[in-house]
Amino acid sequence: MKLSLGPVLFYWNKTQLGNFYAEMSALPLDVIYLGETVCSKRRAFSLDQWLGLARELQACSPAQIVLSSLTLIEAASEFSTLRRLCDNGQLLVEANDMGAVQVLAERKLPFVAGPALNLYNGHALAQLLDSGMIRWVPPVECSAALISDVLEQVREMDREVPEVEIFAYGHLPLAYSARCFTARAENRPKDDCQFCCINYPDGLALSSQEGQQLFTLNGIQTMSGEVSNLLADYSALKACGADVLRLSPRAQGMAEVVMAFDRVRQGEAPPLFVEGCNGYWHGHAGMLKVEEAGLC
Image (tube, rainbow, N blue to C red):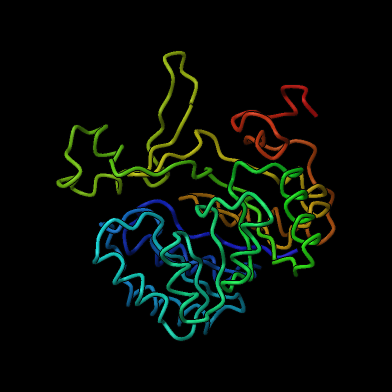
């Protein structure tokens, strides 16, 4: 089982990003994803700087370096940047938008199909396999049973099953919008947001009137209120056909998270219970901790 570090979904400044990846480069990660996937207005790193960071990481880490594309393409300038990213000439690309799939397919380049592509069945996977997909990251709402069924559909079509990467840790990216929720929370217009999401390195918590944390706001992205954590489900992850486990970056404590997953894949017994939600994985509401709810 491989471990991957997903792209940073939050807006961090250049110093924080540099320090974070310097720490991550020394950890037992097999894949590291780089790039801005949420908002094109976030410019702590330009595309050229992401490419420079990729070269630095290749020099000091054995991990495969992958460039992640923007999820919501809204302007011609964003599509132009997307083409430049796909034409980098060296690194594998994670396609998070069908525009990226089209660009990569036209160039006959292999790619990772990101979770935002919303691929839920074997026929969709077969089409993207024809376009060059080599790794599938299922949507975060997918259960273990659904993923197993999709892979079986692919086998029944006599197609080669792609590498499967499961979102195993982090705030779940649930939805995207043309509106910026973080700017709205601070009564700012989207076009004059003052990059206020940089004030929330792990997103802005949104709670119900009863005080339950429902969502995390991250600019135009809505995420789960709690962190999803599938470490206790490691055996089921292996059984469903997972090849890679994605750990989504948080501002604090990521080294400990990586090492906890690494110890389990090296043979340590998975914990019986961990902090975080895992409802989607078990086919229930995503915010549930199924062990506490008595559903497993």
